[in-house]
Length: 558
Image (cartoon, rainbow, N blue to C red; front, side):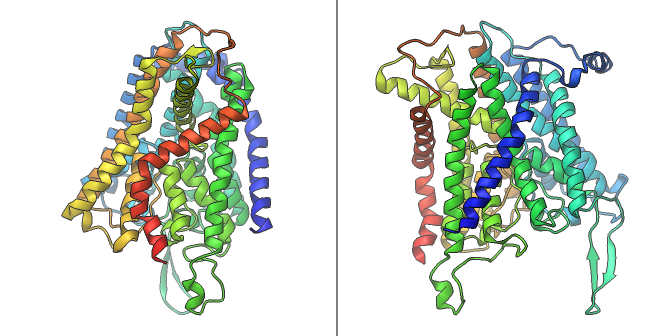
């Protein structure tokens, strides 16, 4: 294995942990209900102006607030996309979107998926990009973080009927976390060469004498929140492989750090908020182990492609197909794992061009629920669902009453946990099956055999788990796929959020009991191993048959 790979992973993890530590302290302040930067007086005026009452909410009230807030955003974005031709900042005079594409796109960005069945530079006006998609990039990210704030409070509090105020959380997360970080990253991206303007597209004559259109736009501002909020929707159709979105090796590293920054800081903040930093560290260890192993497998697969490469007369088995030469195989493989582990969906290479095993790992990372760092908020509350399941299974094996952080885990919590874990696999498998047995679904498949099956499975895995990346090779801008994938994205998002908040409401009301002789330690190597094993076991039992028909079968063919 290339030493450059190990050095790249080591530097990436070291910088990530260093940057996450100070951010985690700010997150703890917000979890505990303290206004950041000492802006209490200004906040009071803001609450009064917006008619926001700071009264705390129950789990049900919090869930209703989050769902209603996102439904309103969905309706507004749908209307904007359906009327963009008559709105300002449309120098290319781009037409309105069809109703099914507009609905798919609205659901996609509201659910933090950012699935794109279109190329942004040829479909969306600047106004739609800025006032529609970029705004939802902030709000969907804030929604995910707010949900995990509520769950962390449930573990930290003692006999409480409330878990915070959704409106206050959404406002503070946006103002104190997402906007300042986005400003910093946007300015850095501009310094690297990412464009930021509202100029008309440039019509140029190349050295060969042909005409070429160069797209312009406010890219850097959208790029920053696309990554920090683990949204992933690119301004251009080729996403972060486009030089106007990701021009240099340094910007590429910064993009990967931005994707993992808030999820990593949330793990640290979780440990601080519950009064035991070792709990957060245990989650970080579990995530990091799976992440590093995944990077090694993908990179090895891409550096050592199929034997037929050399049989065809190539001088190397390394698979550079679909990758940018300015990044190379190692940076492209690392990016692929980061973006699929973290529910981001941004890409700097085409996953469809990866080797069979190299492409299987990003697919599998989505299928286990993207709990390896995961999306902002969603990764941590997804991992905590696996923690509760691990505690329950461990209690069954050793005859102890399951509890976590002093809270007893009872029948209701386990039912909601299983629902939250299994809702997305159910959507993926049912959606894939429907697409493969209907004429409308099969009509979109461009590649035959196992690879075509993988492309369909990847699309539904990406949508239901709110990732947004695509395997390509599948024509999805049709009424069938637009509506099917929109349903997957919507229920994949809120089908997890609602059970999580239901658990939060119940846990907050329970007393925290001190650890005793019968308490299972949840911060040591043994528990980390059990947690990783539970994730692998659930993923294997759920998806091995489907993977055997797709990437595994394709690998065996060669």
